[in-house]
Each structure stands twice: as structure tokens, then as C-alpha cells.
Image (cartoon, rainbow, N blue to C red; front, side, top):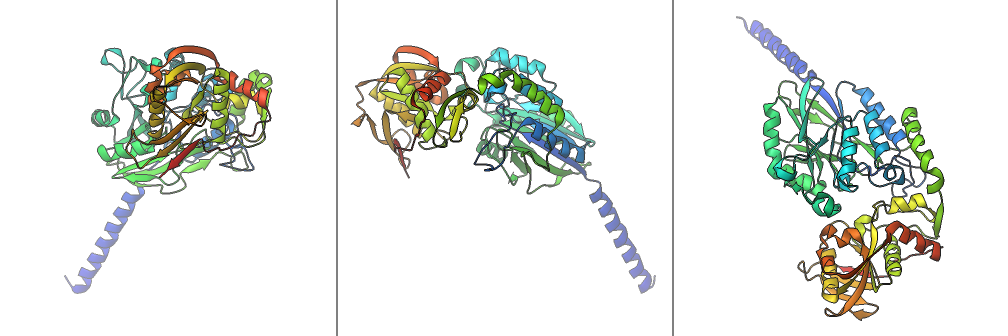
Length: 505
């Protein structure tokens, strides 16, 4: 063979190799993973100044249009998932125990939903009704019911096929559920460490033919990252619980992690390219994976979903438009600090209970409210849980223990009235309170104090077990009525930060 012939052969082989490589690359399958989490019943648009100053955000009619648009771009390769906490949180959902949200999810053809801790808030009977109405499975691989079996009516995983790719979705829920919903609603359930359960589930779904593995998680972003570090073989974690807007997907080892904020202000849209031979993700979106839900020309409202929402809204419109008070300032939450809305609620609790101290769990305050008239709808959105006022007598040592527990919280601390506290977070847990006072006097461990709070905390919710030491318990009115009556009496209100809670370091 002449030199020129050899060169020609080499060129031809190179061209053939590059062509085959190009064909192989072109044969990847595009999948779109659409997801939402922590909707908390927000199917009506609302104003959230931390998101948009000038336009209403969220609303089912708008997020439905976003979902339909994304699905139309890849109709054979799209799945739609919920990472939990979809129902509890607004009047339009709470009054009907989640029914309108379920109708919307069915209409939008969700493929699966992980149970969230707030799915248990209305009790197991209400949860069973939602599960029965759902046209998609509720997933919870790490819950054991009585007798050691899975929670009745749920599945640990579901197998799906999109674009010719076999995939599995495994659902997990935060073990914190045992104290982050009303403890009595889950007393007979065991919540396992997801890292102890997911490896077995991965083995099972692989054995049943799944190539791609998605964990649908209601654990929170930090716990999702820890799960990815501990458990190999997870391709994607679609998360919820921590209300985190993950604008750029995170990667931990070989796992992609996403989450779509809260209250329906985003629809998550992760695009991946999958090798059909190996079912491995070849490439994935690295940015722009959240679609804002704002009613504008890019996302016109879905008329069918708009009509569905309006049907429910009309049933409650007159009653929930009733004005109960007025605030001269925006009422704004703070996760790990004193807030003006927390002070308002704690003051209302203390006044209604005729107590020395008023205490409200920060996680029970679910919205910020703009200055102006406060309607009954605002009140339900602010305090969606059906808690009631409880007044008790506690020793000072137990009050101090409650404050120490609050200093160990990683989400939202207690909001207080009649009480002041200073923390040093550099000190070890259990010794972070450096100063605590009631009405200007130091808290005395042996003194007795009358404390007003809510029944969620009295039951040991959020790990505030010192409430169980209380004596002379008196149960009072629903917490929303307590705050509503306070607003009627004191409006216009102008709550401020008063250094009731001081945090050093």
C-alpha cells in the first residue's frame, strides 16, 4: 500500500469514527423533570414584596400555564413531581381540606408526590381522603406503620417510562415529622433515617428494570446533600421542606439536587440528556432551572384551572374578605431572630391568656403581610394551622429550658412576649442563654410563671418538651380568633423590633 493510500485510509477511518461518535451523541434522550414543593395551598396569586414589588406571584392558573408550556416542549419526555406539603396553608385550601389543590394536581397530571410533614396536619382520615382522590401515588419509603409495614395507601416508589427511558421515583419524608406536625397524628408511625432505606430501594428498582433513579425528598436541602454523600446511585434528588429556591442545580458526587422554593412562586424545570444504552445522565441543566410564576405575557393564565380556582374562591369570598384589623407597617417574619409579626402574635397570646409570658413557635407563622387592612383571609394565611390557646403554670427552670431549646433550633425560634432573652451561640448547646428576664426581672428557676402558648407546643411539637412540665392547663380559643380579637381591639397596630431577643455570635 502506497503512502498516499495509507493516508487516505486513515482519513476515512477518522471520518467514520467521528460520524459514529456524532450519531451516538445525537442519540441521547432529553428528559424534563418538572417539580414543585411546599405549595401550602397557594392556588390564588398573592403579593410577596420579597419576590416582586409590583406584581402578584404564584396562583394555580399561572403555574398551570407554565407547566403546560414546559410539557409541550417535550411531551414524551416530561415528568411532573411534587416534593410534598401541598395542601395546608391558605383559606381556600384549608376550608375544603385540600380538595381544590388535589383537583388541580389531578388536572395537571402529576406523576407522583412525596408525603410532607404537613400532610399529617389534619389527621390521618383527611390524609386518606386526599390519597384516595389522587390520580397519582403518594410516596413514603421511610415510614413504617403499625406492625412494621409501610404506611397504608402509600408506596415506597413508582416506576415510570419517559422517552423510552425506564426510571424510578423513590419518596422520602423528614424524620422530623414526628414532632413537626401534631405528635398525636403520627404517634403510631416510625420515621426511619432515609440513608438506611434508600440503598435497598435503589437495589429493588434496579432489579425491576429502572435505569434512572430519582429521589423525591421532603427532607430539606442540607439533608438532601447529606443523603447524596452517604448513598451512591441516586441520579437526581428533587427536594422540598426547606423552602429553598435552588437557582443552579447542586452536585454532590454524581447526584444532581434541585428544589423550587415555596408557595408556588416557581416551577422547577431540570433538563437532562440520558444515554439510552446506559440510562446515565450525560448532561444536565446548569442554570435557569426555575420558572418564575408571575402572570404576564410569558405565562398567560390557564383558563380551565382559573375557572376551577374561581369556583372555590367564590364559596369563601364574602366571609374571608372581612376586615379584622389594620397594620400601619408590613408584618415580616424572621427565621432566627425577633420579628415584628412574632411580637404581635406573642403579645396577643399573652393578653388573651392573662399570662406573664406569651410564646409562639416561629414555624407556625407562615406569611408576611403588607401594611394596610388585615382580612380574615390574611389571618388564615398568616396562621393556617388549627391551633388553640393554652395557658399553664411553669417553673422558671422550665422556661429557661424552653429558651435553651429555642436557641438550638435551626429553622425558626420562639417568638416571645413579656420575656427577654440574650443568646451566645458560641457556647455549647444547653448553655446558650446568658440572660433571661420577665418584666425586667431575671427568670428565677424556682419561681412560678403563668405561660400562654398553643396546643402544638404543649404537645411537645418542635421538640419543646419542657411544656409537658406545665400545671393547671386551661384551653382557650382558636389562635386565629385570639389574634383577630387583638387586632380588633388595638388597630391600627404598629409592632416593632424591641430587642426582646438578642443573639450574639
